[in-house]
Length: 140
Image 1 (cartoon, rainbow, N blue to C red):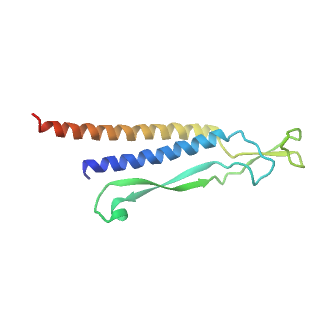
Image 2: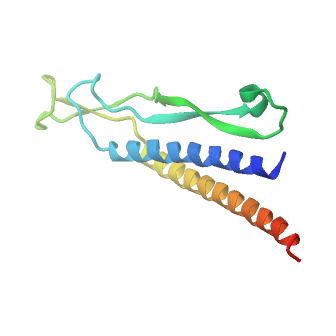
Image 3: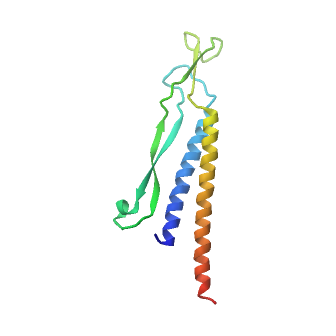
């Protein structure tokens, strides 16, 4: 793998972790939302990642493996149903519906995504420093 491929791999990792941070932020923002029916209730979302080999993408032999965001899926975890007849959004039976967002899990996911993003930045920076050092060898 050439040194320039490091930027491609690190860049794909940055993009993937950015998507992960955005979906986590969306989940946390909607964690306390309330709905009057099952269909309109917010469901937690998670990105789906896959490794995409360069040779599969553009036919070039390479051992660099990029991260690809395949999509974002909604969680299958059950929604929370709460009896609260005095709530303005309560249905005819007095129930309100809350999202299936686990705030603790989302916070842990946010910390993990943030650290992964930070690591990808450090990898790109290290590759940049190595390239600069290589260029400076010719000056001496």
